[in-house]
Length: 330
Image (spheres, rainbow, N blue to C red):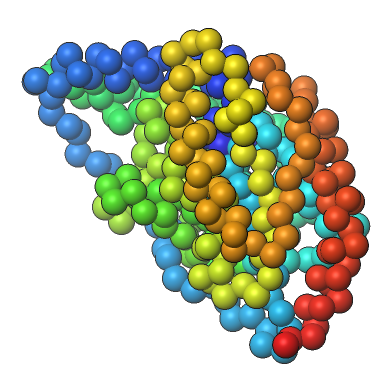
């Protein structure tokens, strides 16, 4: 799904994001032509405390643990903030937040103890400058040594660290898990300790656009590639009840007219198959009603948040039931 706009794509027609993907597509074509004399640059690891996998803090064994799972979704990720607003009003406080891509940044803010209102205010400061730390891409050229993307992603990492007051994942007031994709193996990796900013950067690294960050010698890309709605990660971490919020873009709503549209559509088709598989493990699925649009922009933030809030209100009875039952371990 960052201006939440730096999140991995949920819609190919975001003008600036489409421009990035168009450039990335040209880069891929050029790389085929130039690959004969390519020399891949050595990976340069980040100096911050690297994110780690593992278990989260133990849950209270006397009550059912509730996980809130946030999908990827680019600008549609603003709906996650509306979800948090309504959950707070209903008195439903998750024990664990698990996020992919767009959901990883919103989830990190919430796990850091910020209210939905505070997260909304913080997101107002986001703009395209957050993903404007450009770099020369590695296209196989023998002389100019580039990187494996167009944007480094360091500014996004800094934004996430600032949002969470530079705390480590394991030190956050609420349990947090951030999902990224191992570029070599293709497997989802669930970070539960270490740098919040670097974990969010990895989870949001759109392939071909962001340079895959290196963590402990391995490169990582967008979590949406392997786990767009990380329900299984929440289950693996021990959650008894999983509330899944799905704001991914339905492929059937796509308008396909350009090469970037085709690239995004292929990504969305594969992503939706993974979403459907993971949804089977959720106890409650929340899908905000977001009308198809070719022109979603930062000015749509309030409408997206309202859609998230409305989706929760519609399921208020079920959520009250979850809140009541969590103290009655079966």
